[in-house]
Length: 426
Image (tube, rainbow, N blue to C red; front, side, top):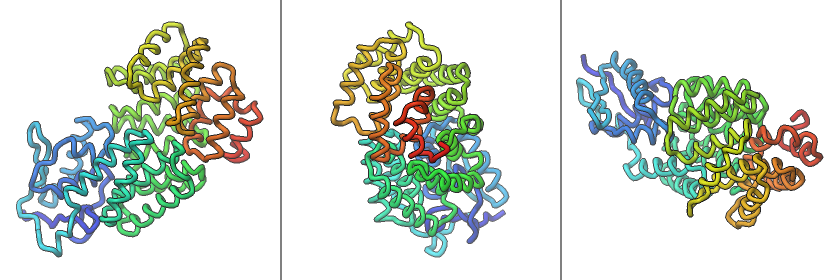
């Protein structure tokens, strides 16, 4: 049979005839990519960069995505061919219309490349990488304002920058929300719009508004791992760890190899009071990602929090032997050593890191847990107060860290911080 007309609208999203094709966010993004590249083959790495936004993508999850697309497209005369060892290609029984009325101008290859690169930078979550990602996305939106996925990426990057305290909160939130509003006006079905909005509002500590945004996001992407992850973080901010664990477990079913999901689930389990399960999850993630420094260091921190033992010292010290030790490793190492009672070694790391001009106020809050473990709660409270004064978004997560549960509500500065960030019932 002749294939129904399948095109991309002016924002670059798929439609049958002149009607939007209703698909979950990942399938929608994957089909958009297939249409943009048709008749060329789309490589697996490109699906990971665009549909998975630079996150972890297993062959199994991509295969499920393609299978669902095939089911949706088959009645309309379209098929997706597997190209062994390479990727997938979209084809039909008739040629895809190419006239100006049916094929609006699409983002150029350089535009798409800039978007993918910005997404990958933002995934690194370091201040330097985030700054570059934000600059790229601003430039992309100025030259291609109809490319609405870039607005979602900008909202995500700005939220992370607020978290580190590297951007003025009010200005960054206003910029991000405006970009999302503009994208919604152009294409309200853009994947990730409401989830990005909720994330921005969470970083601004506007939790009631964020709740509304996350609820809208879940109506569209109830099984989308990214949507579930951001909602789970919102639940942790608002002190509902048991519900966060449920959401993260649902997300893990959809994306079982995602490192960020596994780490978030482990942390949420600790906050929910399930230490043994948290360690099992962290250990399973280590086994799934052998040799990955981030998860190895994270697992050590979880074990130091739940079940500290002298045997943790040796692998912790090995972490900091290299010449280019990432900042998060210093944070984790100081915490593990503090929990083991190695006061001098822990303080050496803490003092050196806090004296470093490159350590942002947001990064400095991560040493509060180490100081609290050493009994220096006044100094820990001062780090948290400075972050609150600068409205570093990540402070909301830091204050909910189980490492602070025993002392923070009892400390005068701690009580004031909980009220300032979470309200009188925080």
